[in-house]
Length: 385
Ligand SMILES: Cc1ncc(COP(=O)(O)O)c(C=O)c1O
Image 1: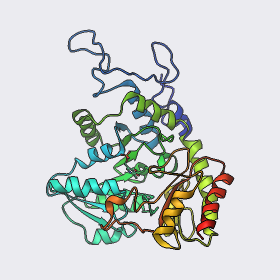
Image 2: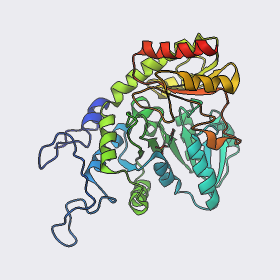
Image 3: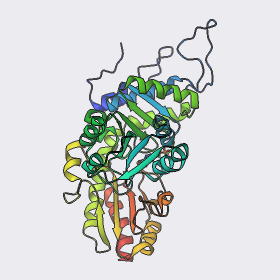
Image 4: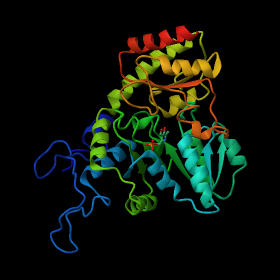
């Protein structure tokens, strides 16, 4: 009998779903099946696995576990978040249209506009904090609506359930990029989304040591298409990457609790500092999406963005001069990172509708001692302020 049950709590599923002891040796942790192929007892018969692009037991363990965390029937792992996003977007063909939020992750926008756009897929980047405007101007060629909440890097929050209702009333499907919240803080399928996508490089993996992507989904037909694409295109994660991601997932709950706490301490510092003009964090009562975030999230996460008095020069200095916050792209790891989205992660949207302010800094608040993080950031803000 499997040791995981769908009714188990989040942390129990994180530790046990898909992770029964390995039957031959009793290994408690799903082994890294570092093999490209699997011996078959007879022609046309196999023991569940044939070739490691098609399937690998370490990947299966990860897929079962993260699907269980998102409350999904199906989980499909990919080599990166972008590969997972690409697989979902392949639902679209020439003449189809997609809506996405006007501050979506720059890489998602680039893939939709430059790659799928080149194959005849049209898109509109709209303000999804006002979904009724999208409904009033609905483009009948729309097959997908794509949302992130909270967004990268402006931390905009949109109402998943309301957008799901609108999307379904027009016969389209809703995808939610749940990378920033993680399933510990938000489960979009329960709010009406049709598919959830992750850059598992971020909070799921949690240790900045692997790249990965994930789709969690209940729709049987779409899941079958995605599994087909996983094998046919071959953008699959290797067994070691699956192992690392699964090891990260085991501590997702405790990590997210501490990310929430440390981010709250950083927000308190920023709110009181004269060098800072705006603090963007869904946990703030003054954040435009705060009430929705309280409804659909169980915590506000570890991502904090802020804007500085003095424009881009000051922002560049702050990003470069912290001691503990490492200047680097990516997010969601145990260590704190700082970046300038305009020049770094979101350079690909410069000049587009999705351009981000030049005085914006994004923090991924990690798990160091909160006092040290606050002191580090205060030091640099005092120097520029
Ligand atoms: C919200 C979001 N979605 C998707 C991606 C792409 O994921 P990956 O870098 O794993 O391909 C990122 C990467 O930063 C992201 O922040």
